[in-house]
Image (cartoon, rainbow, N blue to C red):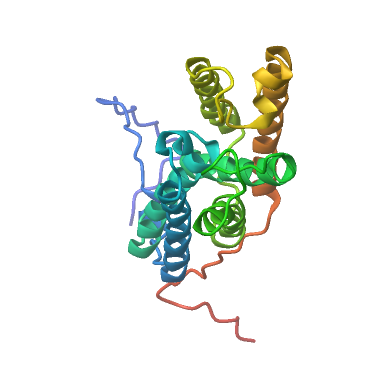
Length: 262
C-alpha cells in the first residue's frame, strides 16, 4: 500500500544566481553556410578590369597626369575598380560581402559620373575631355572617355541590380556618402585658386567655372548638385529596398519533409 500524495506541495526556494547571463552571438555563417559564386566573381573581375582600363588609358593619353587624376570621373572609376575587385575575391572564396557603406558609395559615385556626363557635359564647347581640355578626344582617349563615363556606370548598375541581394543599403549612409563630394568640391576650388587665371582647365567642369559664370553662380550650381546627389543617394536606398531579389539559394538540409500519409 502506497502513501497518499499530499495535495499541497511547498514551493522550492529559488536558487540564487551567482553570475549574470552573458549574451551569446552566433555568426551568420553558422546559420547560413556561405556559397561560392564563381559567375558573379568573373563578371565583377571583368567590371574591375574595365574601370581600371579606362583610368589607365586616360593617364596614358594625357599630357598632364595630375590634371587628369583631378577629375571626379577618374577617381570614381578607380574606387569602383578597387571595390569590385575585392567583391570578386569574396564571391569566389565564399566570404562575407563587403560593407554596404563601401559598395553603396562606389555605386553612388559612379552613377553620379555617368549622369553628370550625359546631362551636363555632352554638349559643351569645347567638347569635354578628361585628357585634353582644348580638343575633343580621339583614338585611345575617346575609348577612355567611353569606358569612364558610359560603360562602367552602366555595368555597375547592372551588377547592383542582377548580382547583389537587395535591402543592404541604409538611409543613414546617404549623408555619410556626401562627405566625399563635399571634400572634392573643396579640392576643386583650392586647385583653381592655385592656378593662374585664364589657364586652360583651371576649372575642370564648366558648370563650376567661377571665372566664366562668377563665384556666386558657381557656388549655387555646386549647392544644387549637392542636393541632387543626396536625393540620388536616397533614391538608390529606396530602390534597393523594393527591388526583387536576383539571388535565391535553396537551403540544403540533411532531410526532406514528406507529405502526410492518409
